[in-house]
Length: 209
Length: 125
Image 1 (cartoon, chains in turn yellow, red):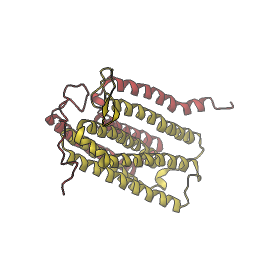
Image 2: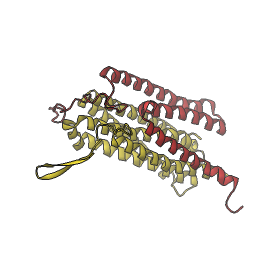
Image 3: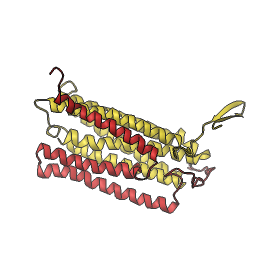
Image 4: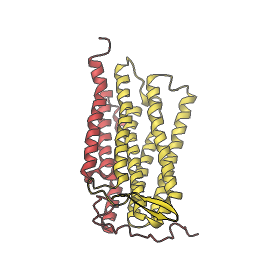
């Protein structure tokens, strides 16, 4: 029997299998397979928006050029910041694998700081667009621009919440289950790299074309 | 001030599961992990250079729209390969993940070809 219950302090505590050790059939622990299935659904979510962008653009008689009015310098800076955050999260995971929680937490904190800088820059961009009278309702380009970058920004915000949890209350797991905690950072990191990956394509398509 | 969480010694050595089967977290020695970290930094530098190249080509050469699209997508694809291959360690993953991704790619291609099919046979024609 994979799962078994045992009494602990008067409570029946269910032990979930394959939280740390990989399943024999997949070779993966549960969360890792789970995050890849989730990322597959995310590919379809953003894929639908990319498909919409192609449809709108190819069907339009004229199409605004993002580089004529969007802030390319700030977007380029944000691209560097996201890439930096990707490397900090993978370094955090590496240090945890080495058993070094302190350095792991430093790199997770760096990731959160990068993410917050990204969001602040994005807020500056949005407020500038609004002040210039450019809103999602203005034209199809701005509608898809705000939808895609807004959805991406929400993903960044979600990642920040997850990393803050692992820096705070979630870090208690390290004391009893360091490998499981390390796996959780790996899974959160996979999500984070995907968010970076989406931006890598959003940036040139929306800003430079 | 000592961090109460960091001060706790791990109850289980994070490497004691060596040989348990997972591709990344369990198999590698500290030396291998440090070598991986150097690779991550090299990939980071590569991504930075490619980002600069994306913007640099645009500003320096002012390519035509079609050329810009092709160049930008090629560079973005290389960057995507670096992130997925090294940071998400897809270059050395389990078969089940490749299976999930192959299915995803098939559906993604279908999604991307929907606009093309629309223009080939628009509604109402």
